[in-house]
Image (cartoon, rainbow, N blue to C red; front, side, top):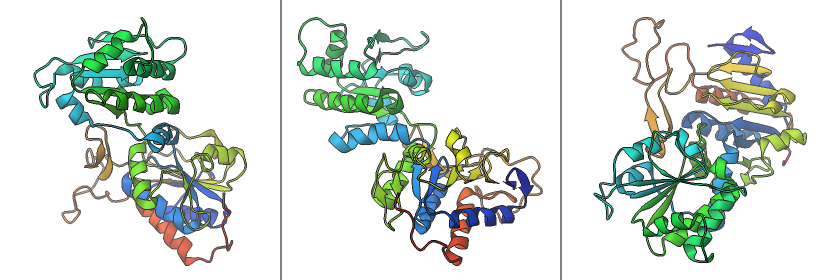
Length: 377
């Protein structure tokens, strides 16, 4: 275990005590990052409730591009497994799908279930495309951008735009498919693109079957959204300043709060790799990191990396669900195996982030709060 205070190496207990003191003295703390195993994210929500903090995951921008459209009009989505088994047509929006493995998997075989079973699978691309390794038909998005192209495509599919158009062939292919799937990255198409896409999918389902399939972000955002839902009944950008969870995507945007001077302390949780925001340097911060250097924040505590040093529940992209992942391998320097240690439990000297957060909560609950009320922002 490694820990630092102001860049100086210290024992873990000293760093935990300093972290507890920093958070206890804050009137408006924020917990950010949340790129971690599900147990750690849950522990962060529990601690935030105790001390009146707000929360904002590093995947917030990507999540809310989807969540905003979902809240306003709903969505018809599918899973990677259903797409592989049933889709006879796949439309990839933008460049992001081509950087994932799913396009290659879909190109390798055709549908084997449902009405489209036995048919060949057609791959289409709007505003992006691969390097030629996967055969597909590409359509340009145009100068107005991807979101505008999705809106135009929706108009063509619904018959609201008449006459010849560069995307008319794409619209016809979507209408003729037995089971279409639209792959997209919410961060790439944005909130407007997601709203247009959900409308396009609904229009297609008037006459055939079509579903949206969002790509998961690399920062456990989909798992954070589920933890937030079962913990608060709301999205992940919530604040506990008034003693109960209040949801506001704008108000509890950590970057905006830091820029406006609305937070006076932060906890950055990233047991998995995540980009450290620049605002961390301007706010007294406790950082729980899986791969720390020691100078990332005022107090830095190293934690076990889930899926490598310890077993953990993580977002599984292929299953589109939270699933257990065993540690990849035992470290070579580990002494003789302890026969009483359960498989997947942390190795000696390695603490999960959830354990550190639970210890912080115990210390803060045991000491009197210096401020009777937390700030509401």
